[in-house]
Image 1 (cartoon, rainbow over the protein chains, first blue to last red):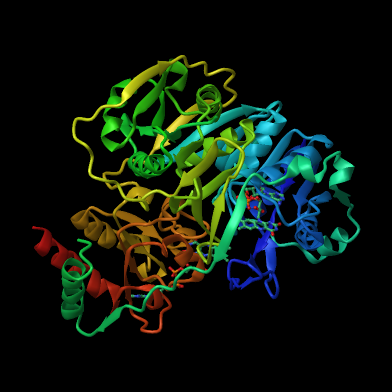
Image 2: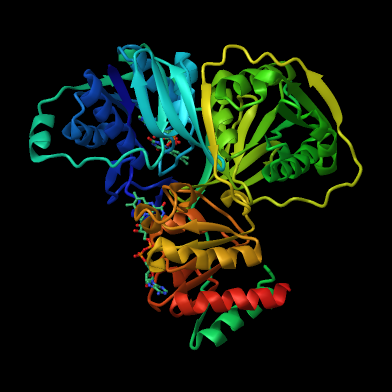
Length: 255
Length: 326
Ligand SMILES: Cc1cc2nc3c(=O)[nH]c(=O)nc-3n(C[C@H](O)[C@H](O)[C@H](O)COP(=O)(O)OP(=O)(O)OC[C@H]3O[C@@H](n4cnc5c(N)ncnc54)[C@H](O)[C@@H]3O)c2cc1C
Ligand SMILES: Cc1cc2nc3c(=O)[nH]c(=O)nc-3n(C[C@H](O)[C@H](O)[C@H](O)COP(=O)(O)OP(=O)(O)OC[C@H]3O[C@@H](n4cnc5c(N)ncnc54)[C@H](O)[C@@H]3O)c2cc1C
């Protein structure tokens, strides 16, 4: 079973956001593997452990993304591919076009991704890649079973779950609850240093800036207005609860 | 030239989802400013009876695709059918809810039509003759305004429960246009559907949410929140700590790795207010926090805070709400 994982490096969820020169600043921000992509890596490793095969992690981004890819290699992935988009002006179309092109040069039975990136997550990239490659997709999986030629995924739907079967090759996106990602072992970290990291540019994929030009234009980036401090009631529950319910009705008018 | 603001009319359990009305009202305002029509697109089996009444919320026309293959939602069938309607009608914009189905279709359709899409938007405006979308990013820690200057249709998904629903124009009907629905090759086979039975509203559409965290101490105490929820007609949510402890299902987790919600009123009980939790509920209109720690971070965002033991406070809140709602 040849499994690919689309892996995005994102801001740490604790990161404080600052804006510099009209852009979100990366300086001083620690970067992590997107939380949902960690589930995808873990699931790929589990499938490999059951069925044999190999796991390749694929990403597009700057040179710093190697850290996230190395971490996935340390968890147990076999190879990494990193494509530098050569520009900061990227949108979901750009990212998906690059990833689909990188993937189409590889052998695969199954592609796993996160359902959304936790930073500027549009929840579009995996779906777009499936469209470009012409393969089926199942989104928001909390359980995945793979057999010869097909995958069965239990997926979140509104108000419950559904079990979806798709023929392989297919893309499946990970939702929280799929698994508990492992921590890299010391041995894994050592081995990761020697595993292949294939770095490419757009030209290596037969793409150029025009072919991946963003469709979405950013007009402005700003910080949200802070919420005004509210009222805090401290005292006997009978008084505080009654005071808040009264305020909700008479002041906030929300009930 | 591409013309018309199209809206995905989402039907669930034989009813129009609330976000559809939010989309139609936003589309109506934008369309008035641009001098365009508002059209809804509806797909399913046995749904056409719902179409004409969308006129009350601003739809001029509703394209309805009905077909047995659309009985259950699948990514392929809905993408194929709606994709061909959009290819034929050439609208200038297509708006969907950032619901599970809406965002699923938005991604597929945007790529199929070779266009851009703005996800999880909290506002749509017309500036200089084009649509401008506002989207919170980095879990609400930044806000970006974007446009899709050239590619058409401009696609956007809108966060449910944020945009207002205007008073319906009673009796106004939309023109209903039946279109042929070729679901094409559907590769997702639905083997089973399991629905949780709940009389409470769906989390992302609820006007009021009562949420519990680690301070609830165990699953046996959630009925305390459910009792409060039922008095005010709320949905029940939870922090990740409560979900990871196995007290409540993942599907009700609120936060950066859970649901993003924007209710009118969010009542957080025994939740400390971690940044990743705030990411999911920070856009609530009014926040109430019950926490025994006066230093808890949740009090920094709460409009009304109650310092106290939730096991004493919540039953009294329930009783007080019952009094005023009686
Ligand atoms: C205002 C704004 C400014 C931006 N500026 C920049 C910038 O300066 N530089 C920059 O690099 N980006 C920038 N971006 C981000 C860029 O738009 C996204 O990284 C890109 O479109 C991926 O989409 P997403 O994060 O929405 O992923 P989603 O669609 O939410 O991700 C879903 C899944 O797709 C896969 N995936 C997504 N992205 C990648 C990736 N890059 N590599 C591998 N797999 C991936 C992962 O499996 C992920 O879990 C900006 C975005 C915005 C909104
Ligand atoms: C990548 C990542 C993603 C995450 N995603 C999410 C997410 O989506 N959603 C989320 O919620 N968290 C998320 N988290 C976790 C988050 O960081 C916090 O750990 C979590 O929100 C804490 O939950 P809590 O507030 O219920 O628990 P705690 O932080 O333990 O707080 C419990 C609170 O209950 C109060 N309390 C205790 N007993 C009582 C009582 N009897 N009466 C009143 N108050 C009482 C305490 O004073 C305390 O403030 C994420 C973390 C990471 C790293």
